[in-house]
Amino acid sequence: MKRTAFLLLTLATSPAFATDALQLENGNAMNNCRGALPVHEASLRSRPLALVNESGGPAYVNCAFRAPTNSAGQEAFGAVLHNYGDATVSVNCVGVVGVDDGQATYIPRTVSLAPGQRKLLNFDYVTDNENKRFQANTGLQCLLPANVGINETPQAFRQK
Image: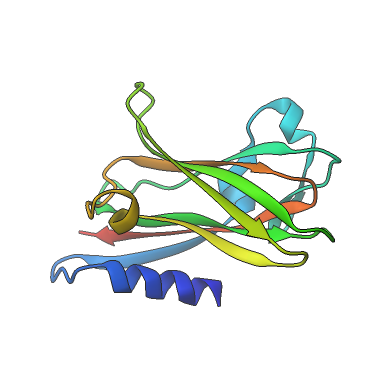
């Protein structure tokens, strides 16, 4: 269901480009994400289908997205967050677009997750980049409360 919502959001916000094919990738957090520092890494459990904060406190997680060299630009990227706990929590994330030269763009988001809820946190070029495809590296950083994980890291881009 989340992949369908991501696909529909991407297609609904994408103008038609005859020569560019839309590529959707739904990565596993195990491949794309890790603790921001060793102290955060120690709080995280790498499950086969998720990266979950199983400590008693918050942990920062960074996720990076593939940047194909033959891309006409990235249209959307995000993370599917999952609350494994029994209380409602807020998750703070920042989408990052650019290069590490001090001029990257930072896009903050906060989402609320009820117990057991999964939710897509999405960054898209229409809403977040003045209708211009992201032309640089993309990533995100989330502060995961205890018992919250990242299951998937979807992205959409145009292939030349």
